Image (cartoon, rainbow, N blue to C red; front, top):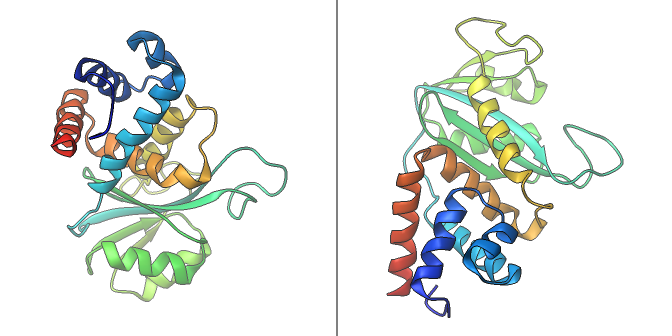
Amino acid sequence: MRKSRLSWHKQSRLIELFVAGTTARTAAQWVGVNKTTASYYFHRLRQPIYAHSEHLEWLEGEVEADERYWGGRRKGKRGRGALGKVPVLGLLKRHGKVFTVLIPNAKADTLLPNIGQKVRPDSIAYTDTFGRYNALDVSEFKHYRINPSERFADQQNPINGIENVWNQAKRHWRRFNGVAREHFHLFLKECEWRFDNSDPKSQLKQLTQWVRSEMG
C-alpha cells in the first residue's frame, strides 16, 4: 500500500466496498477507477489479511474437522479426489474460530498431522464417516463420526458448523469469475477472516489499521 497512487479517500472507499463483498468491477464504477486498478487493490488487501491469519492458539474442546475440494468446474471425477481442484482442510472450534489450510491431498497421513498440529490433545473431534479419519479412533482425541446424509444422526453431534463455513465461502466465491490457483490461498484466508470476524464494522476497522500501518 506504501506505493499506491490512489488518494486516501479512494483507498478508504475501496476498503469499504471490499468489506461489503463488492466485486472489483462494481467497486471500480463506484470509486471512479478502472477495473484493473480496483482488482489489483483488492488483491493487495488480501495480502495483510493473509499475513495476519496465523492461528497461534490451539483449538480445543469440541472441534469439527472436514476437508473439501475447491475449484472451477472440470470434466472428470467429482467430489473427493476431483481433478483440477484444490483440497482444503477446515477445523472449527464449536462456537469459536475456524482454521483452514491448503493440503496436497486428503489422505490419512496428510489429514491427521494437520489436525494434530492445531487441535489440543484430549479434545473431541467430530468428522464425517470418511474412512481416512479412522486413525482418530486410536489417537489422543475422542472421535465422533457423523453421517452427512443424516443431518442430525446424533442430535448432540452435528457437523453443520464447518458446513456453514464452506457454504459462506461458496457464496462469497460465486461473485468472482473463478479464482486463480496461485491466489487461492489469499481468497481462502479472506473467507476465514470474514467468518472469524463477522461484524463488518470490526472488519473495516481492522483492515483499515493494517493498511495504514503498511503505509507508514
